[in-house]
Image 1 (cartoon, one colour):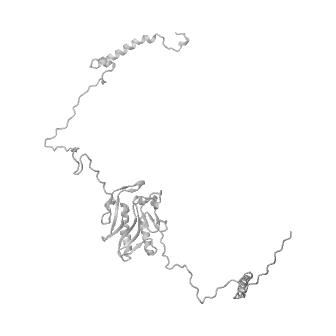
Image 2 (spheres, one colour; image 1 turned 180 degrees about the horizontal axis):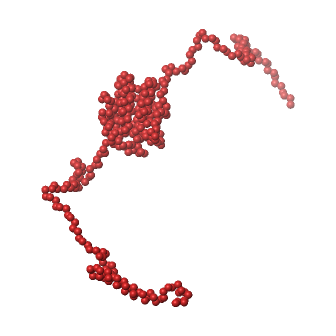
Image 3 (spheres, rainbow, N blue to C red; image 1 turned 90 degrees about the vertical axis):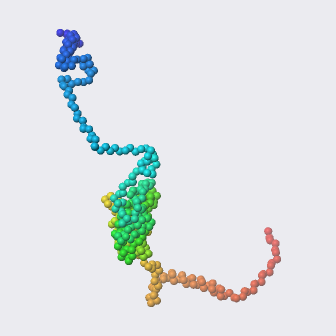
Length: 362
């Protein structure tokens, strides 16, 4: 029993671990030898210290042959392999050596396929990438609109528009405008284009928001010209009100934005049409149909008839009555003086005799 207070917490004596170490090493070696004898392979130092590759003990490895594919028959056709392009030879005739062939042209859109020459003469043009977001894709040059009877309505000058906007203009003219002009006894021949694509802001104001004209999504129409030579200005007051109201109803149904007289001072002589997309399919239709002006403006009143009764004159006060009399007397006095003057001048009066000079008294 250890009676030292500082070592009272120790359970074993100082010599116990030293005496048990040889016994533990001997037991471990015996277990290792028993495991080696159970294996058919003789033990080595590499197995003892783990230098060799790992190996499962007590298992037998069986080799399995993997089946190989059968040889290719002699009469089978050869495999097709893509031929590598030679660097010195051009890919296509006309392409210089060492230069890649140009990228293939993009496929036409569904709108472009639908806008055939039976509807409009509108050849495709390259995309426009302008400054500040100007330009667009899938553009066409609307030159004429083909009516169902093969008659062409020229668009002068030709309008640069998106394919969707050009299709909407062609459908509007073919479906709505042609029946209106037929009622006038003539056929539509020209659609007067005031403006189409132009990279600018609203109303050409510097710094304003980009207009739909800058996206090739708007057209300004000024007039409709008939085959008999007549020109129908859509903003002219002298044009039939019924015709202008019919055009107003037509464009406000088909287009998202319609601006004309009464919207602002920039659209007094033409009609602005565009297909700008807004939230909740919101539309703007601002076009006032004004009545024609009178032929003779009532600037001057008519003459007073001879049989009209005399006009009543307000009575004058006493003070107003005296003033004219005094003016008359004042004006009569100079006339009386002038009448009193003789026609000939009187002789001048003799001058008085001069007095002799006298000395002054001091």
